[in-house]
Image 1 (cartoon, one colour):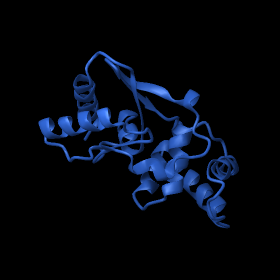
Image 2 (cartoon, one colour; image 1 turned 135 degrees about the horizontal axis):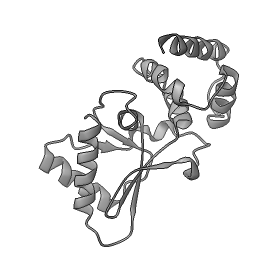
Image 3 (cartoon, helix red, strand yellow; image 1 turned 90 degrees about the horizontal axis):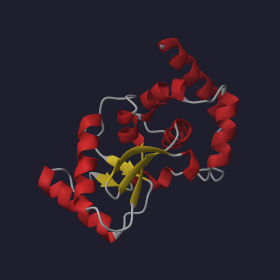
Image 4 (cartoon, one colour; image 1 turned 45 degrees about the vertical axis):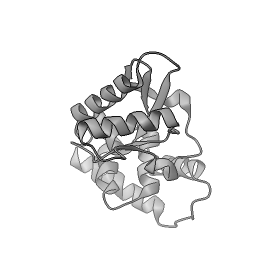
Length: 173
């Protein structure tokens, strides 16, 4: 899904939810948020760090059927990477339609989450996100990471790895 397809699918979800009832907030992260910010072309799904109540789950399934999307096109796969420092006030509105409010995390949180997941595909994402963060140094990132993920196993090479990533990102600009 590219940014337009993500937007269209979320608008379809808003339509499925209707206009009456309480607001439904969905906080997106990962590739979908990166596509919205034009850090990458597309993603295969939309990751949320919000709980999915039964009403929302049913609406997600109806959109999946009507648009021939995978059943879990909107999912909670990123919940394992949520930082302890996730702050609702740092989130911004990505889309608001009817009862649906789609929020995105800050670039700094997105960076930390990608750093924590540290899959092979996350490296390029980190290179793209870095210039859009407010971090100034690798030490600042490491301190934020340690605060966000206090249970993470200490990696004696992480500071060097982050420094190298920053250098590579700045060379590619």
